[in-house]
Image 1 (tube, helix red, strand yellow):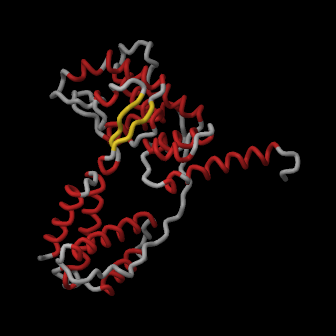
Image 2 (cartoon, rainbow, N blue to C red):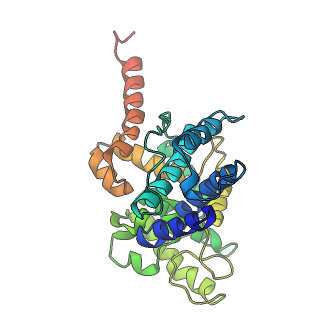
Image 3 (cartoon, rainbow, N blue to C red):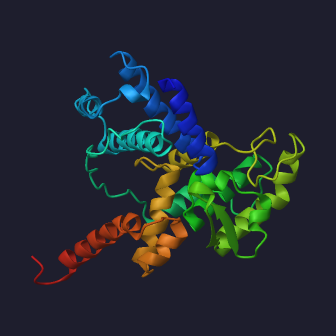
Length: 307
C-alpha cells in the first residue's frame, strides 16, 4: 500500500467510524498531505519504509521552520501523524509504530479574550434592531440580531449555531446543540435570545425560505440557502465595526465572553463545562484565570493595604 492510499484509508476511518467533523477531517488531511510530500521527497513511498528517526526529523524540521509555527499547530500536526501511524499498526498495515517516542510540544496557555458586558450589548445593538422594532429597510438585520443573541446566550460554536435546525428550538427555553463528534447537549436560551429568534422566525425566515430549496436550517442566507460559517463571521465583523469595537471580535469571542461572564456571575466551572460541550473540565478552567485576574484587579484597587 502506497502512502496516498494509506492516508485515504485512515481519513475514511476517522470520518465515518469516529464521526469527526468535516472541519477536523480537513485539518488532518492538510497535515498528512504535507507529511506525505515530505516523505516522498526523501524517497519514501510506503508506510513500511517510515522509521522513528525519519518521523523525529520531520517533527524537528517543522518545529524549526521560519517563521516558527504556533505550538498549537505543531501539536495538532504531531497528533495527526501519531494517529495515522497508530491506525496503521492496529490495522496490521505496519508492524511497528515509529511515533512511539515522539513528544508533542507544550502549547502556551493563552487567556481567551472576552468582551465586557457593555461591549456585548453594543455589539448586539449594532447587529440589528430589537424584536419589536421596524425592519422594513433591511429585514436581514433582524436575522443578524437573532444570530448574535443566540451565540452569546448559548456559548455555542459558530459551526454549531449555523447547523441548527428550526426543530432544535422546539423545546421551550432550551436548544439542542450538536457538538464535536456529533455529541448532543441541551443548552438553556435566555428570554432576549428567544425573543430575537422568534421575531426572526415570524417576520424574516418565511420570506427567505421561498427563495431557495427547502432546508430545515434555522438561519438562512439572502438566497434562501443555509447560512455558512463564513457569512456568520462577516455578520459579526460588520456588527463589531458598527459598534466601534477596536478589539478583534470573532464568533469565538462571544463564546469566550459567555463563559467568562457566567463564571464572574458565580456559575460553577463544571456547569460551564457542560454548557460549552467541553469533554474535560481542564479545557474550561482556563476561563477561571480570567475571573481570577478580575478579582485581583478589584482587590488591588480596593483594599487599603493591597499595595
